Image (cartoon, rainbow, N blue to C red; front, side, top):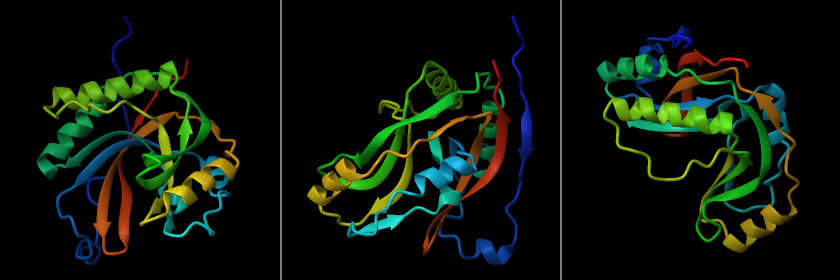
Length: 207
């Protein structure tokens, strides 16, 4: 049996300057694990046009990510335990492929627009291992079915019918890439919206 790897690509202990921290609404780290799309994938998603959709606010391309697990507000002393647990994940690097566009949580109550991705066995296994690491630390089980997606816009009181028309008429961007690592992010809530900073990265196995 191959031994489990515990490999950090890097770790960032502090995000720095006090003047930046003074602008943060949530002083307690809010953590989530996610996959990062490479530059060409970000450009492809950013071709989607929401100019004619009232109430749509675009997500900056540098903030695009595919969430594996949301941990929520975690004290700094417990954040290190999350990093250590995720370092024990031993999974194959998943190949990702876009499959469609979706409004979440539903078309009747649209709050975000996202690109969906195929739920491959490799991606499913990675998600299950990240979830198992969270459960081992005492986090409650995630009851919602894993639906791989990348949010590209947030909606504020958008007309559901207009959203449906948007989803029917927009071409699905051709996005495909292999994720060689996943990341632990710290989300900073600011008056102008959330900003995500990488806290740690974890290598995934090529097969």
